[in-house]
Image: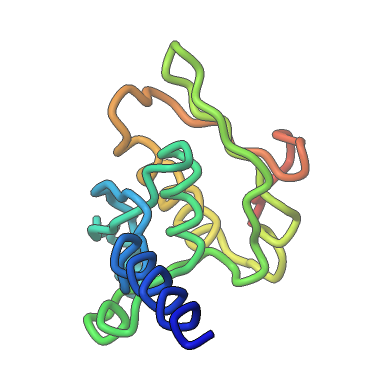
Length: 152
């Protein structure tokens, strides 16, 4: 009986060594998202680097990263996001012609006011998608609707 326990331990030890003791990380790629520095009169878009999952389409990965907002270090540098916390990405696709279509939840326009903020939200999303090679234009929608969205 002792021999079986010892053999079982060796087999288990070999299995752990073979699979490794560290977590397997998902493949990632370098990307950019656009945050903002705001003053009372203007919005300055600032590209910030991100490592995003290579296991999902790049357009989806960068928009999900954009929705997370700035890191603590970026906030200390004065960077922010104008996108409301309640916004969620419903879908995104990029056609062969380079048209990116991004659909968000109603949360994208909840509690926003003022033309500068609305413009800033659009600019953040559009610039983030346009930074992807091959994307030539962006169509935004909320719950599938393109008309009358993101109005100040």
